[in-house]
Length: 450
Ligand code: GLU
Image (cartoon, rainbow, N blue to C red):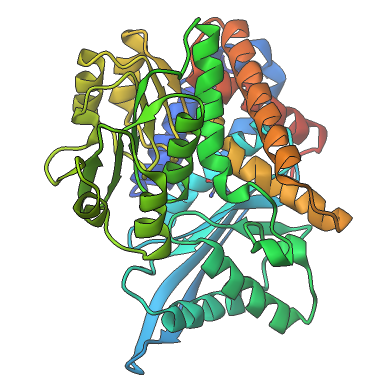
């Protein structure tokens, strides 16, 4: 049997995915972005073609779709759709967050699960990949409604997860409150205190230091490494951050700690610009404690203003951290950023930068860090939480943050080294995809056709 060339093989796999997943645009976008970069790796490893690694990698191992019925505060019955996609377990148990947002559907969860394979591989923490969620909108819901929803969601999910099989965590719309309700229901149904079944837990009952901050901090650590390699630094630079959840908040915090000036934050209603630098205590109060709108920040902060048209990417700055959601930074936004002198872009969110925008950055010589590498600090710290749970221990803050920092340095090193090895030094998209793919593919190869 003669093997197809890497190019032919990639073409065939792309065709299969396009046909099988027609109508799943986010998933197709995520797969295409990876396939486009894998030719050099496959040229070096024909055994991956022979073993059908890619054909298997693009198909989730298992997918659950289930009904989530619950009653609202008016005693009306509500129904949402719940999902859990167990994408790949070659490196370890399925690991990845749950997203509660009205935009959640199979395409979104599959794209997130697919990205998670590569991200988790880059952390070197021996975790497989999964993702889940529901089209439930926590905005405006009472605590009691959120609790009833979480209990109903877990009543089904409980059959599919476990500390050695699948370990969910948070994502958009799922934070400490939701993880608490989910864990309570899991414990009640199973009658077991399996702390390691969920990560992102409360600090008093198995949570890990710095887990909340890890994704945002990690993205900034990655940017710091990337800039350092190019002889630059965060200190003294203006930074744009989109979003105002955990990832954005702690990206802003770390930029400030490193001497940079983060001047923006956003939510679905608009964005704020604070030329004096974001007042973190106020941001945490408005978005974290009060669960309010970002406009309230501007109302309470002299000198800050709230903008409803355009996006944070219209503001001139040298650094950009998209930390809101997928496809939030378009080609037009990238053009504006480049014109305004942006030097580095690091994705705190998953797939926030559209494909044409990535191309524009790379062509303009802007350092670009894909989320698979740059936002891996969150899930990496989840793996550290699992280790602490297994050992019934708890690390202090300094140890936790220094472990996170070390992991992000390693992710950067691995990613950069792969970009060199596969012929495009400094192309972190190719580097992240290639390094992660080789790790997962090798494990799949050694474990046989399953
Ligand atoms: N949702 C986060 C991510 O996109 C974290 C997942 C986890 O900690 O399992 O990586």
